[in-house]
Length: 443
Image (tube, rainbow, N blue to C red; front, top):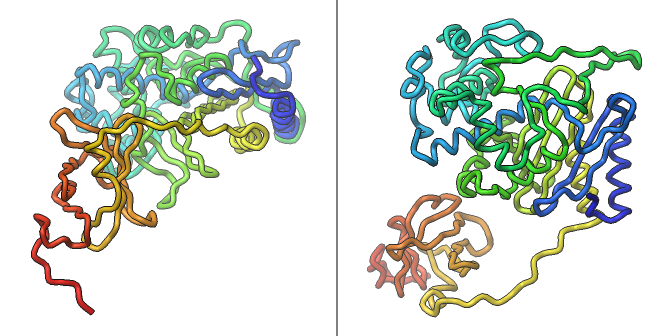
């Protein structure tokens, strides 16, 4: 199982042991995924009379949301819905039918965080019809689309959306379309042996209180599932791009795009479509955290480096908050990823002739060829609008990111036309279509 070297594994285990001991966690597991495979696993503490293993189940709480979101995106890709659809198009019996599916996925609908019921994490759930009947205008706390506001209720509604469109329960749809195809056979709605018991650790004494566990019913899509480190490692690989045919890679990339932030302009934490996002230490992470009575879990993927990292613990609170990034730092320190070897790539002579220096008015840009016939247009010096482009069947180029995402680039011998902006070989070339005819440069 271990693919990291012994010094690395020892350093990773030491960090995990410090977390378990200093934070007083009954049991704690963690794992690292590299290039789609489990590279390291560690466990500390006890589950019953034994140490936890990669097959020990823990509750994963809101990580459930990220899995339900994949089913919603599959429905979108099949044409069964659009993300801009109002709920009433598919759930005519809801009293908040003007909210869109995208707003629910990204927690920008304005819906209240918790349902108008008893404390749902600690009491038996109610049926979906009853929940929908209770959720009305009073549960709308913000103007839809205005801001990020995390909503467990929103994912309960999305679970009912999946159930209606698939003609089955959200759980059966998830099992058939996501869990089984990815091999997540130990991810279940209720615990199976061996599993950890959820505990609250007394703040002033080393004693435990067993936490409750119930079927959340309508709120299940917000946090019902149990899983294992082994299964969650496969989920981390999925989030990093190893989709196994369950989802189009482009759709997964769309889920990882920021749709809302929850900590200001220079954001470090945000949300995509069903996925939490983080920027820390130069890393861009996508995944989800989970919290239920007696349990904490988090899984992150770093697609750019082919990495995933996770922990699972049976405690209600108390972890440091830096365990996973510390594990990634240790891996980087002891076994940094080797860059791919550079190799020459054949180039279309016509495209090759278009590379080099271009000017947007007086500002210089460089056009470079990327592998697999991509183009990159970047300002000299790095300050300004940069985008990558991919070829289209009609001979144009489609922007992938930055200011020009979704826009069209046309490449001619003497100029580039980027959504009406003209780039020329010389600054303000008078022979160019626009602006053309400018006066000569002078002192």
